[in-house]
Image (tube, rainbow, N blue to C red; front, side):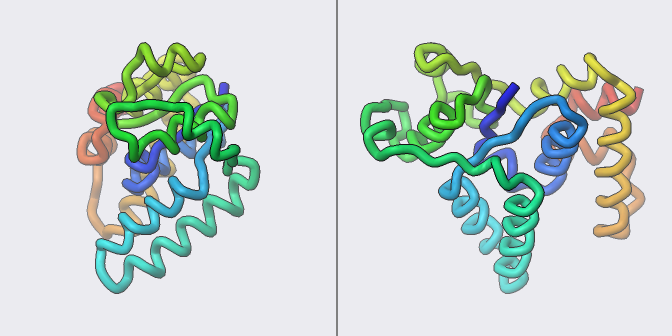
Length: 180
């Protein structure tokens, strides 16, 4: 299965790490576009002076770890598409060009299910998307969660628990499942 990851799900660190951990575990193949990465870069710059270095490092890591994830398309594809927010047509174009099965986004209202279905796509919020993998293989997702939790503890110096970390990352149902 291929999944196009919208900017809103790869910009938050914990959410991105959970999604990419699931991809590394073999649950799906992630896709994005250069424009999605640029939107991520701009969002990270809002963090202040350290944001630029953080953005460059994160994008370099994504590009290194997932060299086949970046999709491109002819301008004619985007010009034939319509969404409630025209600024999001590039996301739909990337999903179509990458032959994605699902578009993972927090932005449900701007990606109507009927319009996506016309293009052979479905939409999933990241919590439901990851929860499906958790239900399919709890041990694999527990390993992903443990790795993300350890990294969050190291980076923040805080004694995070998995349920609280996932809740803060807007993955509450996954957090509950991982906490067991």
